[in-house]
Image 1 (spheres, one colour):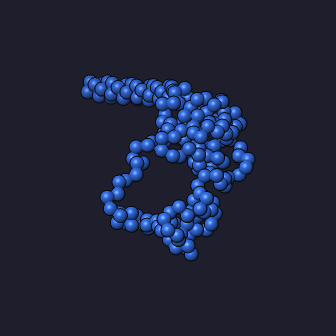
Image 2 (image 1 turned 120 degrees about the horizontal axis):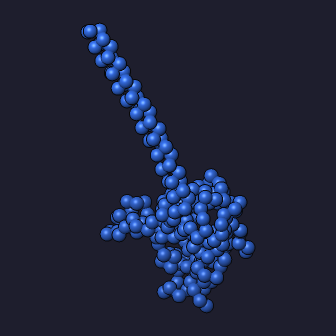
Image 3 (image 1 turned 120 degrees about the vertical axis):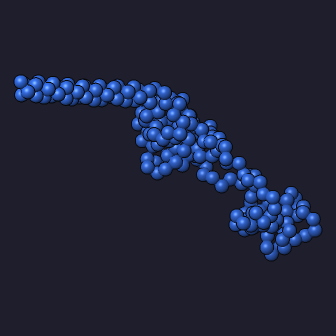
Length: 198
């Protein structure tokens, strides 16, 4: 009689353990299926709601038309070269294929390789304001030395130097504004290429 009771108790315990094992397996399978479904939904959300992902960096080929971007690469793997100033952004004008048409803040439309990466959104402008300096020594702490005006120098030191007053360096009394090395400066002197690169 005692032997029969021991066998019945052991069989009951075995069935409980086996049933719990099957429940654990089914629970694990359900969790995996649920995680797969959630992953698929997140990928779909990632693809369709790209404008809400400010700060994400990805190739231009994965973006859609009218997306605002910044820190754009010119060549794949080179790093961000275009649109890096605070508060600026570029805009994708056409659906990316092998190349992507982007309008820069200057208004220039430029074709860029779709393999190049860019960051979604506008460059943050908060925290980029210049710090107010309360005395000249703070500029010296930053390694900035004083800038002396050319009209305050002698003729041997600067083209604007010498003479009485300040009118000798401009207009009909002089050669116009010059650099310390004698080259024209300010307006009316173009230094860039004649034909803009595309």
